[in-house]
Image (cartoon, rainbow, N blue to C red; front, side, top):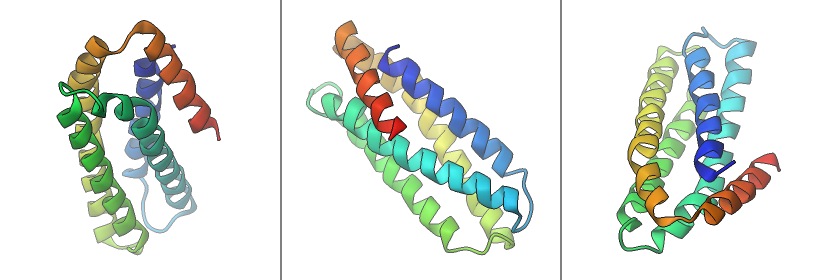
Length: 142
């Protein structure tokens, strides 16, 4: 498996968790459980992705701006998560914020998969892609 397949696999988990989460209602056990899962997935993913995907790309002139942009979006996602944690799950504001988070994450994932992966693919060797995937997956397993 290469780094792109590893990241796409986790992107699919995130998409599914968000889809299910926006369909939940009130301060229910399922909403709490799905949110905990989503928060963990997004947090771990961004840390591992920054270490094992963006760190090598930020060193290259041709991909530094893409990497910086993606890392900035990770911080925006963290801010949405913080807002959700501070908002009562029964509040309509919670669902509105969750939908805004979903929109931001879906935009971010699409941008990565359509633009960033293509650029990175031009600069990483097959060996690097495989090694980065192994490192990424090891971090996600912890």
